[in-house]
View 1: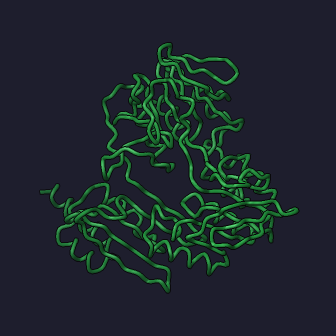
View 2: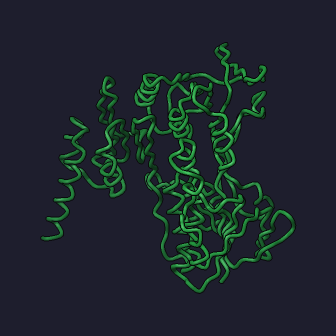
View 3: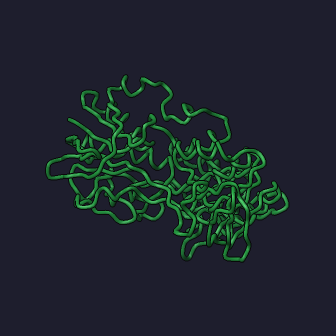
Amino acid sequence: MHHVIIGAGPAAVAAAEQLKKLDPACDVTMLAAEAAPPYSRMAIPYLLVGNIDQQGTYLRKNENHFDNLGVTVRHARASSVTPASKTVNLIGGAEINYDKLLVATGATAVKPPIPGIDLPSVHNCWSLADAHKIIAQATPGSDVILMGAGFIGCIILEALAARKVNLTVIEMENRMVSRMTNETMGTMIKDWCVAKGINVLTSTKVDEIAQNGDALSVKTNTGSEIKADLVITATGVRSNTAFLEGSGINVDMGIVVDDFMQTSVADIYAAGDVAQGKDFSTGDYYVQAIQPTAVEHGKVAAHSMARGHTTPHVGNVNMNVLDTVGLISTSFGMWMGVEGGEESERVDKENFKYINLQFKDDVLVGASSLGMTQHVGVMRGLIQTEAHLGKWKQKLMDDPTRLSEAYLAGAQSQHQYMEA
């Protein structure tokens, strides 16, 4: 059995390892589009800071890891897929045959369509090549503009601040990290960054970037014009699906998969940032572009490829944990609430502490926090187990910081039930 994996990120690596674990005799070929060994994009900020070298970004530190597993890593990029002949066509004209195929091509950073976006000193921060360009230009005291204050943008922000640049962040939404925060929490993150000496402009868009001598001139919709040595864009990503045109594989925002991670075409699966996978809380299918989800997708897909469709995917809990210049923010599940639900909130703006719990009846369905890391595991555990809180629901409505007590009480009650 020959399994071919297009991609070399976390989903691909997890799948390759799981396939060899479940079927040691199978052949696995992993197609890596970049020249580097399989690496984690989430490690790039640590490379920017200088905490690690390039090898530190690699997903597996032993250079013989894949050879020892019997996994072939081939540096090649797929140009198309032909399901009728079970062939992956490669750029350059070569092709490779498969018995089962996993598409784990991830996503690509996109640049907004504004004048000047392709100037030499305007970069994404998505690949190792991008990272090395930024390292060369983001020197202490240089003027840097970061476009976008979403999850990825804030990770990059952390690294840029550590490089001691003069940093301005421009975000079109009215708050930072809008996809994991409400207005109160997102504004508190902004206030924290400003207190750290970072200029943050929310409800602002970049209209144009122009070359002005050796520097860049960035014009915004508010009429301001900001000088910069370097502009970094972190305004979103797009699933890498263009090469699948004509394959018959159903693509929406990402590749549409079922509960076994199989696409609309038999023997072809998808995982990671390219896959429209199942959400645990809602049962809906969408692209959940975070590394833990990619790893789980890869393992589920590998199990289906090696053992058949015996274990359906229950879905991933929407989960974000972010460090923004030392302030930890989290969001889990339906953090924005559900129709007919209730919420409990506590705000301490002076000390940058915040917690918000979302309930459906007496079940915790969503949660978010700021500056309160002690609740991270409990939030995920209660949401994922869908535990009925009973009398503890009202206690949490009165004081959401008693979350750990509620979790322990529920665990103790379950233990007593099992003993009886």
